[in-house]
Length: 631
Image 1 (cartoon, rainbow, N blue to C red):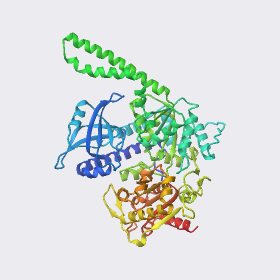
Image 2 (cartoon, rainbow, N blue to C red):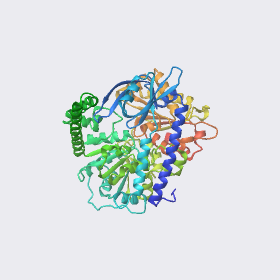
Image 3 (tube, rainbow, N blue to C red):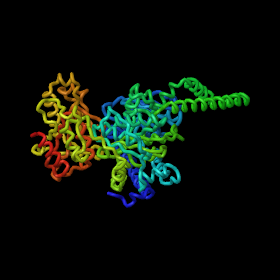
Image 4 (cartoon, helix red, strand yellow):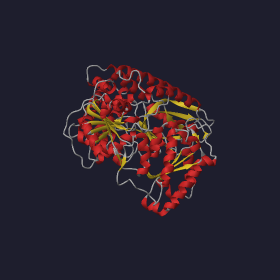
């Protein structure tokens, strides 16, 4: 639905600021409430806290930031939410359970499953953390990201007489996007819709959109477009909403031989990923050893300015001044060398405001997963570019908005969604999908993409077993299963349905044959929209001796956790079973589109048709699965 300010860019941006303010206040209040009332055990289960935690060594990293290492030794199977750039606070817990929060907060510099490196404000705060017994660390409210979002909206609103103002009026107003007339470039290794998308990117003066439904090779198309643009421009900026999405496209670009400089630390950590981070490159520069030794000497000299005679103190100060000048010179030289040699600068959208990118400007900005990003977050990066290419799928996961009123008021409507609706000439739809058996793809294509998708010949009839049905709905209506509410953050659980799912999984594994599964590495995904159901299923799988041999091939996660992934076989537990026909956030059909399009060869959905069938989408999906079973 159009907002009354939809074609007035200034009014639209002012409205975005108001909605963002609502979200900010709601999230801040919610964080405060949870901090004050929620027990440590619940925070640990939610993945927002490590307790007990252990403080390890501290040191200065390559960017001369003081960091401390934090490790966890318990609850290692719980996925956590700590990642680069997120603020954290520390606490100690008395044996009686009383929490005392430490004065200073830190920022996550790096995190893996068991270890975190946290940037600290000063040596005193590091010592306090290291001296604390029964230490815990939890996510803190992210004021910094909100500051950056508000700053970007304000700058775009106030822009006058330069490129940002033009882009604002094209993207949000009635000004028409422009396209150059270029002779089409042929890409024999792409399909025709991918080739058309790359050519539209090359022709766009202002904006182009690559709309990539599940399995249609959006990343392949993006990499090709970036590679082609780099024949025409020396450098581009590539951003995404999440660190994981930035990692993914960075890795694909590196595979193509593109020199990527990653601002911020990767989520999926391996040697290949680390090799293109700014910090790693900084340390690997030939001038870094000299810089490191200067910094070390400066730290040693720091305490000597208050000792000795006047002349001795002046001599130390003079030495410090010369060393600082040389350190600044070396730092600037290394920084310039890294940026000048990189073809692609990659960061998250909020990361594009990093001081390392201060003063940088780019001919072209690519935003991947743009349909998951708040509009304000996109403007953070757009300020640094002359044109913008958005890629994603607005029929998959939307941005996470915590304030219902803000979402309803339009904060959840992304810039990509707005442009697809109002500037259709900028959009290229990728039409051939390479993931799913056609029967798995067809329902999603008909409901979400006007039936425009087609399965590539090599996947159209793919399957694991002869005479198998690619899509199965197991109706639990006659089984009298019931959902249980287990709290705001975890939602609902349906243990009987979860147990039935595991029985069905075990039966399907036996049908295929365990030896074949292990030899061919046939993998399975188990999805539920509710965290409580996911945790219950994980616990049961961990305890199951029958499933133990296949555990490395089994993934259990929420829909959001499976975004961008695929498996040979997918089981979905929908959980909801009540007499009122209430389905809660299963009504967000984009989330279900993600769930039902993860499977390559077999999709099994468990749900109570009596509850879910009252909704037109699920009614149609149940009918579709029944028809597929009889074909």
